[in-house]
Image (cartoon, rainbow, N blue to C red; front, side):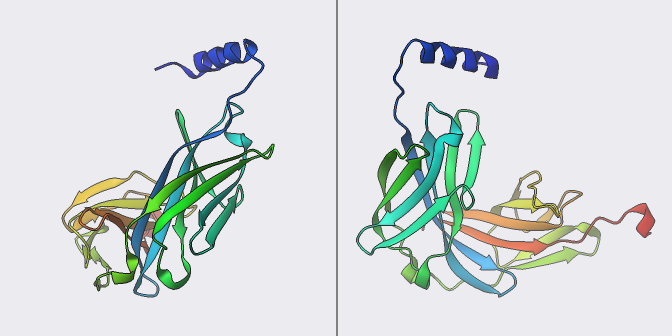
Length: 224
């Protein structure tokens, strides 16, 4: 894999050899409907995630606005740098949100448009299809996080699936190391103050989310 510096030098050479810039692009769109359990209200509700992988020769800061539009119903979501979530990985830049709450709890099916607008006013778009029908969701049990007496940092989960990810966060909201768990018992790392649970239901092609759940702070020697 090229180093960061080499990538910059190659990009500079290509830019110097031509006066034109390739237009911004949407490389692909990611969309997933999840069922979310809120521990505060003890209720389940649909939650929609939608992201675009954005490409621009002018860098990741070239993008200004993003729209997700369902023309048939007129429903749309508008995002900007203050309201979207950006995921910047080596060679990939994604913008969108993972927590769209759709009015009425039903995401319209069929064709949607993702429209990305750059700072200089360029519009690029790509269509994608939402096919998971949330109007016939099964009745789901409440999810309960139970601390294990033998270890203050260990927990088991009731009302949840057997194969899932545990997503711990500290008090500032920083994500700590993700854990893949098989079974109903796991331990949380030092520094975690809350956790979220995630799994994917292949039979329904949708995600399952639960949380955030508060977890017990790790005792220090001063507390003993």
